[in-house]
Image (cartoon, rainbow, N blue to C red; front, side):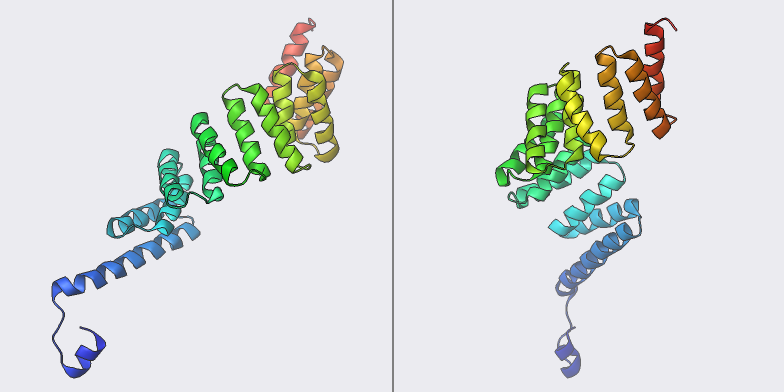
Length: 245
C-alpha cells in the first residue's frame, strides 16, 4: 500500500503488485551487503550475496564485485568469466581487458592473456602496462622475439619501467644475448636497491659468460638480500660442482 492509499484508505496492493518492490529491496540489500563484505575482507560471503543478487537482477556493478570477490577466493576461472561479462557490455573499457590479462596470467592461460592484451592495445596503444603484459604473454608462449619487442615498447613508453627492464633482461638471457641482457641488468642495478631478482639476473649473466668468480660474488649478494633464496643456493652449488670444489 503506498502513502496516498494509506492516507485515504485506498485499495491495498495485491501480492503480485507488492512483489516487484520486494525484489528490488532484496536486490539492493544483497548488493550492498556484498560490497560491505568485500570491504571487511569477507570474500566468500560477498560471493554468496552477489550471486543471490544476480538471480534477482542483472547488474554490471554486481558482476564487477563478483569478479573481485572470486579473485580473493582464488576462483580465477570464475573471475575471468565475470570479466568477460563486463567486457561484452563495455568493449571500449581498457581497464577491463587489463584485469583480464592479469587474471589469465595467474591462470597460466597465455592465449587468453594475448587476446586480452590485443584488445587493450586497440583501445589505447600508449599504455605501458599493456605492452608489458603482452611481453609476459609472449614469454609464456616461448616467443622470445616478441617478448623483447613488447618489453622494449613498454620501456619506450615509460623509461623508468623497472619490471619491463627485468623481463627484457631475463628474456635476452634465455636467448643467449648476454651483453644485451647485461645492459638491462646494469640499468636495474643503478635504479633498484638490493632486489633479489635483479641480483639473480646479474649472477646468471656472469655464469653464462663463464665468469665463475663473478657469478659466485653476485650469488652471495642474492643471499645477502634473501638468505632463503633456493635458486641462489642451488645455482651456487652447481658452480662449485662445475669447478670441482
